[in-house]
Amino acid sequence: MSETRKIRKGEEIEIGPLREFLERELGSTVNEVEIRQFPAGSSNLTYLVEFNGKEFVLRRPPFGNRVATAHDMSREFRVLTALNGVYAPAPKPLLFCDDPSVIGSDFYLMERRDGVVVRGDWPFKTEPDPKKVVAGFVRNLADLHAIDTGSEALGGLGKPDGYAERQVVGWSERYRKARTDEWPDIENVIGWLNERIPDDDGSSVVHNDYKFDNVVLDPENPARLVAVLDWEMATIGSPLMDLGTTLGYWMSPVSGDELMSMPFNPRVLMESVSREEIAELYAEFSGRDVSNISYYYVFGTFKIAVIAQQIYYRYAKGKTKDRRFAQFNRFVGALGRIAKKATAD
Image 1 (cartoon, rainbow, N blue to C red):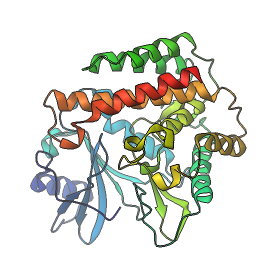
Image 2 (image 1 turned 45 degrees about the vertical axis):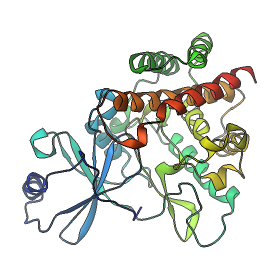
Image 3 (image 1 turned 90 degrees about the vertical axis):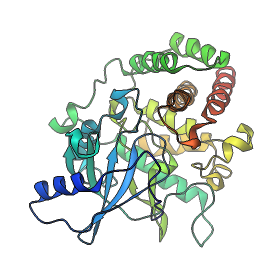
Image 4 (image 1 turned 120 degrees about the vertical axis):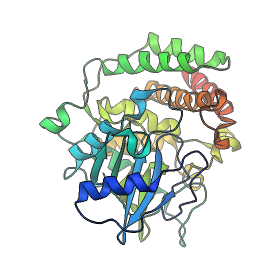
């Protein structure tokens, strides 16, 4: 998490208006504001903001955003506010701004959590114990799903009744609105999912993008999570659909070297722990029935393909010039093939 970069061209934040906003909200002088960017991530943009000797994290929507509801800063801020005090890995939100004259969009400021994000190679000096590290990762997802959703703060975050159907139908529509290439496997998976929508499996707080590069690990004890990041899609809904997304991100060697080597994948862990083992760990920690997990895995893989498609659409239409996204259509096709194969397994 210490790895920040110079801000990408076209994604700059003007310091003057931001300083004025901070001084108004904090009621004190703000000196020497410095802004750098966390370069990873492909959705909401994340910046390190330093002033008065302290570090904070700023989140704003991507430039060229086409799906406003997927980048609702007020919702993300509200989710973190509701989780503050009941789920320790959620960073504390501090300030929210809905005045576009400050940086050009809504944004919020939150505390910074120091730790390590695993992407690609293992970043620690000691060799990992993959089973322990992954068990910590899965246990935290089960802990999130165990939070009491009856509080007033959490109760208004979602509509659990009919959640599975809304998700399948909604992501199918999002794909078609952002489609740029013809992927028959994706169309086949859409039909398969819509024909088999399961009954609701209960309700819980769901992250909806729980993957390894959205968690921060304790450098002294990698099996302990310091923070869970990127709460933009969190809601109240199906815990098994949340798990399905996590499984969709978890590649296996048979997925091919390109997907295994994607920069946000913890390859060293994926080579040692299977999706089946993750599902078994989740069942152990949560007490939930995962016998129909194959459906949720197919859905999760399809959803990730749609996310990649939406990102590629922004690039293809010139809404973003971030070259990282130039080949995302290939990932859409690859994920479609994986999801299609899983329907037959």
